Image (cartoon, rainbow, N blue to C red; front, side, top):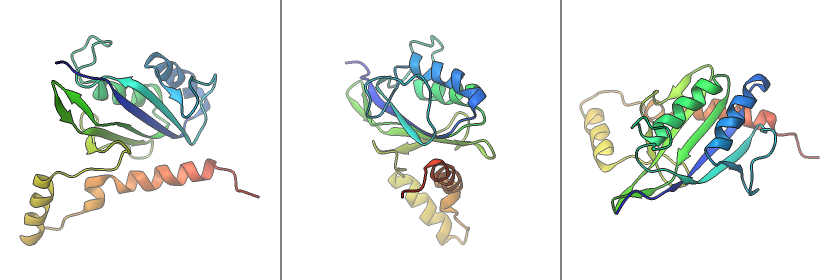
Length: 175
């Protein structure tokens, strides 16, 4: 058994016009298309969802770096469009017959990447943060010991709020 492809998603809240060609090239090279269209449009749109049905689980053989595909993609997104606001996640997949949780990263130009340049949050297929039992138990123990536990800092709520605000600002009001 080997690694199976999984689906990946990029919700692009905003992207400066001068960064769009580099980001468009990256998404096209990686096999992304605008949901629900079957192909990539000639130009990116703010507050749009782009999907890839064949995103690799595990290492990124196409990049030839031995890094995980998700890590490579996050780094490329930040490098090619540092002024963009986005949510990037990959769905649940399988590596050697074992289920692998999805991975989530957020980026806002004022805050940088979340949770960090080489880290990601576990998530489900819809990009909802998934905290393991061990993580929750650790948080409960820290809280019981009197330590302040900031769930917003753990789940990236500050990024989510700013990204959502930018996406909503791009959506024209309904008549």
